[in-house]
Length: 271
Ligand SMILES: NC(=O)c1ccc[n+]([C@@H]2O[C@H](COP(=O)([O-])OP(=O)(O)OC[C@H]3O[C@@H](n4cnc5c(N)ncnc54)[C@H](O)[C@@H]3O)[C@@H](O)[C@H]2O)c1
Image 1 (tube, rainbow, N blue to C red):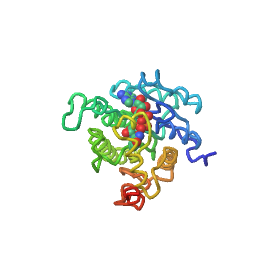
Image 2: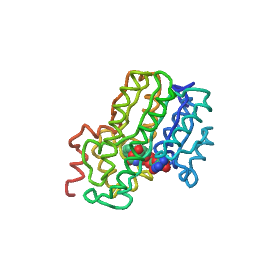
Image 3: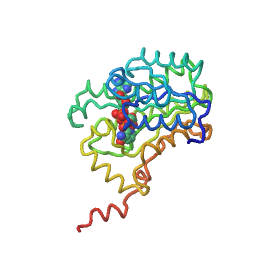
Image 4: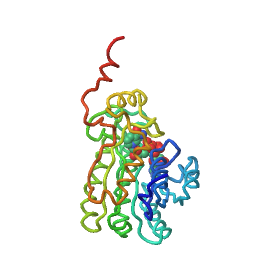
């Protein structure tokens, strides 16, 4: 049972494909805390994934949107406002796709059309959503928008390839739009930088399982699970974080601030 920190709040959650999706766990937490939710995903993902199963569980409406299409995003925001009877209070951007990782092109041999598609889906979509909301004044005062990111935006993880650049852009958009949205409508925009999680998107990265174990050993608290990220999102969507905006917040068990741990030394010591 939640503490109903989001009682009376309404929000849109992108990207819940299946129960492994980070957005799935966040949606469950927001529901537990009393929020009313609209789920969105690409039409194909809704057809072949489990979004509808989650929707039933949390009594959410599902509105398909292919995030590269401005008209889909506009439809999503307009229909959400109709459904909620006006403005909504929060949104979660939990969308990523890397063409070049999928096609196994290394960073030194990128396919540029694919690179643009990656940026379009994983980063520019965030701007499209924010701009659509801004122009309609769709988000209530002190509302809160969060996008999910990863530390590869700042430090290099070779297998993360072009997604590192996509995440840098995503975080930049959160800061830039945060200024305009804060000034005009007092809406907050932040990114949460999460530990690795075994999901469909995460699983596409070469050597992901070993990296997950390394990050776990390198984090004083261990890797943060999606359920805990759900709680951090609830905090950011709630009224208890009203002056936090334009930040990239690490939710990673301390990984980002750690140089070495005893666990890593022990793992590297010959038995
Ligand atoms: N898994 C990790 O280790 C990890 C760590 C840090 C941050 N993240 C971020 O979390 C977010 C969610 O990823 P996840 O790991 O839960 O994987 P996931 O595969 O479950 O979620 C990715 C979602 O993006 C959606 N999507 C892809 N292309 C789309 C499009 N064109 N239009 C609309 N939706 C589209 C997919 O349908 C899916 O629901 C991503 O931004 C990811 O980069 C993941």
